[in-house]
Length: 422
Image (spheres, rainbow, N blue to C red):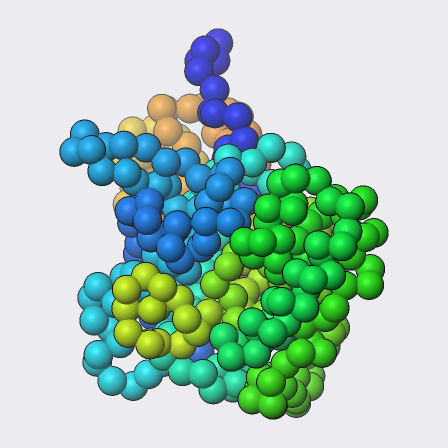
């Protein structure tokens, strides 16, 4: 009989073996980040609500419709993080990481984020992300580096259908003129009242509208790529050139604006065509004014958030061969009390040698213990009984072929580590 309680609607929850795959995907990313010099950061799950209002933007759907906000016992307004960048930048400033020299500050983090969205496949109210940020440099090479880390990670997982969509949103010097031109165009369209309000607050957000009837009206909208200043155009050309040098294919996507207000210049998204309507599996961009927006010093930055939930869906959709390391490689089967003591110690020795090992508990008979061995997914079973103890040996069984041989107890750890390394 199961509990009468269930996880709240819209929570992405993982149990073995799928949770093992999620963890393996995280660990593969951690290695990519380490190789590029990014340190790990552990963040608060909730923040002062004003951090997101000021950083993400009042006009965004995230702030206006989707945040989980509550008042704590001290009367403070707090919000479960809907995204990571604002919190990462807050932490960098609060702990003075930008004052230690050697900019940019290069950090990454992971964990759940929360948005009150309509639950559907690939879109959850509690979802999991990988976040990486480089703070303190406006060098186009840093832009290309962040993109390359994500791209190489996707490739390391065996994903081959990922597309990189790329755009530039200009800067605070050239964007006002484009903003005015876009507003002029949008004011001439037949739009609903909420969208017309958005036109006046942040017209670029209208370009991110996913409704087909709105997108049809935007076909002739002016493009930000046609209104870049010389510096922004040079920056964008440099990023594209660097990506080409790295062999990373990108697609110019002049309508790409993404859903948050803080983006400037380089903006990108990773798309997977097999995921249908929720095809975006990650993305990011530059946010050179965000530090000032939240009360910090001028500090340019760029980073991304990659969706772990959607990445797993993409792996499954492609049938990629990436798999989690086995939770069990060797399974111990003990027949009798003295054998249990010996096998318990053997399992500890194997684990110390880096071998994933488990055993049958509860004094099970041979038949039941071997069923447990098969269920564990182990490659080998080590079977120990009274006769084996007397002979100073253990039975080593290959669970795939069924072959079984006696191995001296003093040699079993070495034998198994050698066989598993092949």
